[in-house]
Image (cartoon, rainbow, N blue to C red; front, side, top):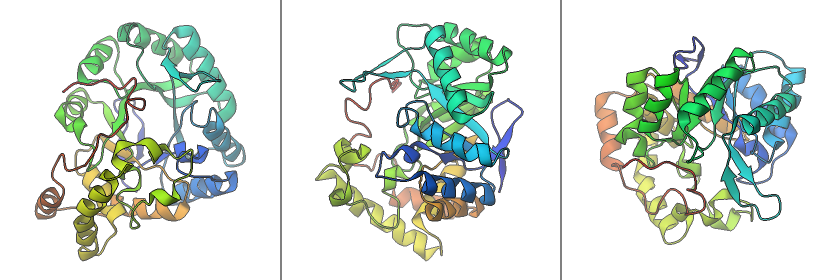
Length: 330
């Protein structure tokens, strides 16, 4: 698989990575065996970057990955995150970027993963009242101690990135980016390119909207992240399915799948863009990997833009609760 530079860290990783939130069941139940089969498939495909977090299932995702790595060491570059805190009784969340909290959570992540360091450590959400420059100093200490390779931030604004990068080079920014979530094009994709920072795109398949089979609310479980997401509430869901249908037809006309075409479109946004589709299925991951081999010409990109122009989606990408901690910048 094509390799891309992970910021200025010196690491090269596969053009697509694997998002591992799904290992904790946000879109439906799964098993450790199924997740391990997906990781084995990732290795076979040459996917080398895996992305997780301490709060994915409150440690479940990291534990599942750690159990795999103990039997299959090497190959993968690991990214994890911290900074989101959840109340155990109410489920309400807040953000803590203090040195003590981040250190404690990083130590816990390393233990669950069964490793002595991770290649990339993100601040999952910024704590608004704590200067980002101070957070960078904390991350630099972890780096000096050998606990992390590089560091990054999730869902921050370009202005915050520039403040952090002025203290020390940021390795990566992670934000939602896909054909129906294109806010990063209003400054963040460009800022990352200018600064030599990798842009890691999560949910590149629109939480399933670009899958061959359209999402069906009747199949959503009670814990499904999409159950309260505005784009998956009616009448938005039906409207979105109808708008996306011609894109799926176009993918078939090109002899590929809508999943592969959506991934290929993202890869065309710049050499610093690295999509991390999330899946618990080896079959779905194989489909995603096809996108890394699909090179789109200007006519094809123009046709995709005609079919799905920026802003086509019905509904906001997050509910009010889901958007907590995301920095706006436009």
